[in-house]
Image (cartoon, rainbow, N blue to C red):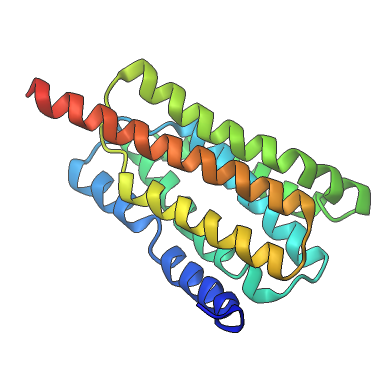
Length: 203
């Protein structure tokens, strides 16, 4: 693919994938009427990482197409979290988290150093969310209702964002984040598929 076509392809394909990225997971959850296999801690950390990343990109006025998918993913993550709280038996437990996220969104841009520090921590937060899901899978030895399709789509979007970052902002913090997330998303996908095979054999 020509270099002139690569950037718009990566931008638009990422946006297209992200418009449905959490839907397979939500549908699996709704059909199973269970959140078995999904780590609540992982989802909360992931949402925190997404919010920080979106705030950072908008604060520095980066090209809109390089982060336009994040409001879409955040909306889907919130819907997924509400499903998890519902199947865990208490929607009221979601209220403190909503308050924390709303307060954090405001506080992030009070000072430049706050948003820069948050972005430095964002990679660790996002990586921690992946490890929380991996730990959950390792302990249960069962992928339950976790969607391999959702995680593989996440890996794809990280790969395309590595390319778009190199071709546009060349922000090293952002690039490192996407490379780490790419590796971890592939690892989680492989773990889900591994435990799915084990469960199928046992049945």
